[in-house]
Length: 296
Image: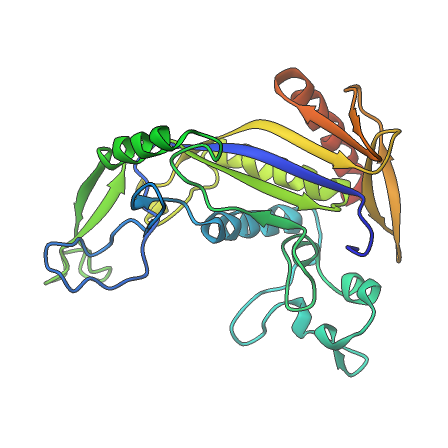
């Protein structure tokens, strides 16, 4: 699937919390002044800052994508510590991850593992870390954005309820560090996707905006609703007639999607930029093709 270049699709995204948000750090605090659940942080050349790890976003997207695909009748592997993913399946006495042929590894993988990767397949979807400043912002602006978002952090005190008695558990008071505003900037890239895989990502983002999918910790307790804005979809493709996608019907081939947008040609690569109206037109076309592909 990745032996030849067909297309890169870069979704430039902005994530804004619409309710309080907590992306929990995995560290256990020793300092009693530090909240029990602290927002994850990372040092940068512009100062230490809260951020959204790409792995956190990708995990949420993968989980909801699995539900969507199961809802349209696709068999989805049940990833667990015991069973692993599709790479752990045994076909003709051999684990899928040990099969030499990439075509066969793809064929014996579920639609989720085909899209988000497994021990047998590289991921089509790559999600960057999201920072509170645009990548191309000047240094002083990045420092300013870090300072601004730090002022939007606060604390939430909670208790745990005993499900049997319905009363508060003893010694069950906790504090959580939450973010109530700001913006995070980052990118999601698809390499050589099938058309339905791009459509799946569009749908997951749509459901995040609808509040169906929430991000981070304590999502069942009111936290984690975010607004995800696709500022641009930037596509690089080898086709001069449209956008080249991977097509799989027992083997890998190529499918060309005709679009209204005009490309900018640089050498032998066509560059497309989709924003606002042209982006909505692209989504409509991709959704239609996705519906057809997932019915097969």
